Length: 86
Image 1 (cartoon, helix red, strand yellow):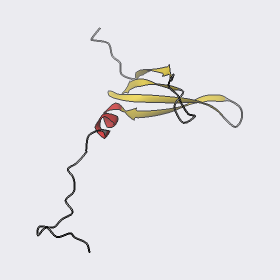
Image 2: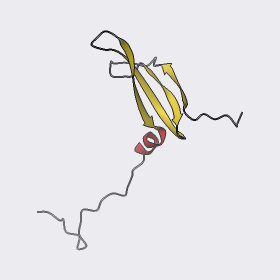
Image 3: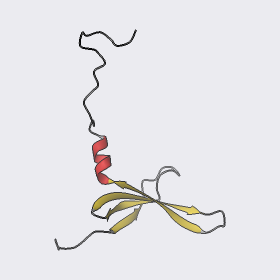
């Protein structure tokens, strides 16, 4: 089924590893406009007592790049080897 289009679809699963209220109740992944995303959802109750879900979406590529340095280390020395501050 390599011809199946996953665009604008996704799936959420109950978070069995939730350890605090800040952790999502559900997590999963989706594809939106050709971009693969991580999805998180929290079950909440409004001030009027209505239950709803709050969602968060983060590109998968961004999280993969966080573990790698984004740029070379900055050299804080001038050409003579002196520290630029006293």
